[in-house]
Length: 125
Image (cartoon, rainbow, N blue to C red):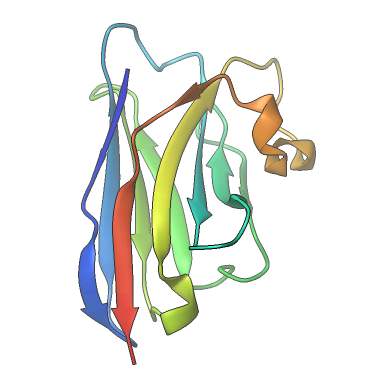
């Protein structure tokens, strides 16, 4: 089970940090990712991190502003979001999947096996 938290209302230019805690099993061997979905739009990839933490991928729209990290001892993955923009407004979902190797193809949400319930992020202009 994945539990996302940390969403809220923030002004443009501000920061938020999302957390996703995995329970019921260790996330140690699983790649972890964040996706988001705005009203009327499809779910889109935001960032992903390999099980070891040594490989990360970001969507071009968030590169340089968002940072994904993980703490395997706490079974938790984080998404630090800085320089927020109104277009970042969406429900953010964490996801996990077992894969031998994280690759850019994991931007495809169908490759992720487990999903959290989502947390709302709203950025005002």
